Amino acid sequence: MEEQWIEELPEEARASAKVVNELTSSERTCPACLTVFAAGPKYCPSCRLFIGG
Image (cartoon, rainbow, N blue to C red):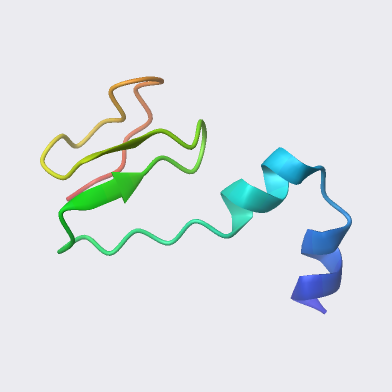
């Protein structure tokens, strides 16, 4: 059911819905703007979304 819902979203929203951040990895992907950045910052350097960590 969730996959059907995701497939109905626009392409960018589908990409955001599939983002999973492993907080122990060396890279993170912002689910809001899809910027990839090195682990460390708690906020996305591009859009300032709180990622945590």
